[in-house]
Length: 177
Image: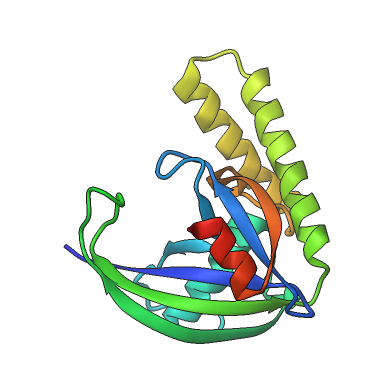
């Protein structure tokens, strides 16, 4: 079994920073991750350009609240075949790397995500069910909120937080080594 995935690297409008996340959810919790990260759905409905580009835009909307209108560039920069690895908790698949550039301040994206996470935690706490029921309720509320504000990150919970990392190889290597 193989899937197709993508790793996005979201740049600030001036290319000085990358919008990075601290992984939430269930896999790789607490690790630094690029944004957005996701899978490519196999569909015949193309919304923007092609299935892979569409997935990059959709994941940006869902994870960090950035829509197509707030992306000035979307470029495929590489791909690789990921093999199954228990050490790195990976699934085999074809992985595509994208770089997108924001037209809005990167700080605004971080602030939006912080607000979405605040609401997510609030909704989990207000529900009186068990842990799973609280999670389902909060995620449903997140998706309902998108109907009111298209810039709301419905899947913000996939990253506990976002931060800006200088887009400089030396700074990046300090974080990953």
